[in-house]
Image (cartoon, rainbow, N blue to C red; front, side, top):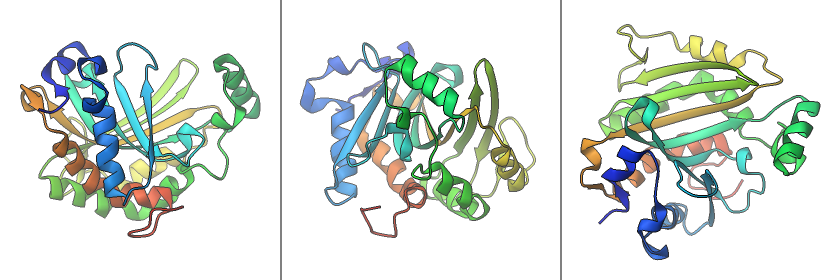
Length: 244
């Protein structure tokens, strides 16, 4: 039986303690991802860090700065559901030194965790935008499913967002019926935001019905496997490579 339970979607949190250590979704999925990368070791990141989690990330163990690497993720999000989202994500750190130092001090974390430098995969995400659309459409076709792409930039209390629906044929505003120009997405990302933290997600949604009574972890790996070429592009990995 899968560790992804229907009740988790209803309550909006992953109660990992429902299972012993061997059976936990975080560890079982990590093992499957490591197999997908020929044994390369992966870290697990989770939020909140204590109590009931709603988000898990997996990225290479060799990466020391959590947000630096494009990651596989699993997220419960009742604002859009209740749904379970599985896919890939990439983050943009602050470009303002003072703001990054302040955030690092407030969270008792290294400055490098908060400042965008040349190591971050965000730069490859941005440079990929002119040619990544066919890969995103291909994932929707492979999975026989609509995908969601959402972009969020947060500066203090101000938030800018875009939320797109992807079919095997084209990209739409969520709630819209006419395809959008991909340049709209590119132009939104390209705007200067020195003091904003950014997140981009490409995900398939699993509904409450699909997780009743449970969802098999192999279905999560189907999503991660289909999205691997995009994620590896953002990681700077050549086809079949497992190193930066």
